[in-house]
Amino acid sequence: MSAGAATWLVVDAGNTRVKWALADAGAPAGQWRLHGAMAHGMLDTLAGEWQAAGIGPVRVLVANVAGGGVRAAIEGALRICAPQAAVEWFASVPWRAGILNGYANPAQLGCDRFAAAIGARALAPRQDLVIANCGTATTIDAVTADGTFIGGMILPGLRLMSGALARNTAQLPQIDAGTALPPTFAGNTHDAILSGCLAAQAGAIERAIAAHGGAPCIISGGAAPLIAPVLNAPARHVDNIVMLGLHAALLAGEMDETC
Image (cartoon, rainbow, N blue to C red; front, side, top):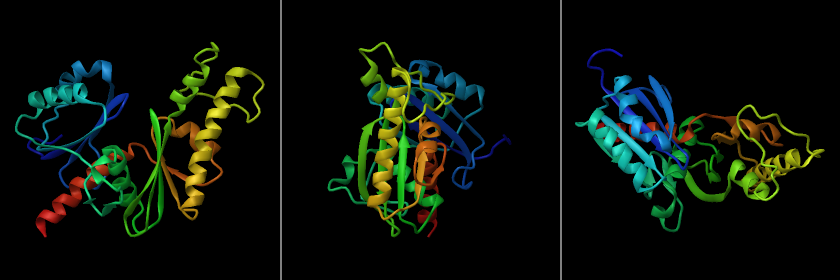
């Protein structure tokens, strides 16, 4: 990293992990110098990790859905690594970065879902879109070609769904990026649980696509590599859609400020 280069930091504090990305100020959305992720239980080492990476941004944008304890950990790391940075805690508002928030009460929309919608529109402008973010929870949202976020659905994520079903069966599937996909009609209980949960996740996404006129789908999140292959509809797999949306929101704000 060149000395004196102005940088921006975007942070996606989700229910399980805190993800972050560092970009040159004004760089295109998703073009990052560095990025990383950390489980909540390791957040006491976040400042050390950022210091080791030489992170000292001038602007920071954080989307936090993980509560006050995680916010306090991020604030502590920023006090050490970026004491002079302009820090904003991203929130769902009626309009931002080309997205009109169609929630009856715009502030009630999860800030991660709002950021994901901004990111999806930055990738595919002027299109009807379905955005499936498959993490601890799976959120499936719809955006119109004119940029209106019209709403969506929330269901348990793949791991949460399978864990709830298997809790009393001693058949808890091990679900990670390397998990082999089971056949639709599985021949053992372990695989049958995973097959059923994958079908439920895919079915919800396919239902949303059909309800939105067959709109293109962008899928993201930790479980996306498992869910995308079983979809009976095309889907574009994009890593870190929330952070991409945060980056796009910073860029849009900069353009607004210079107009």
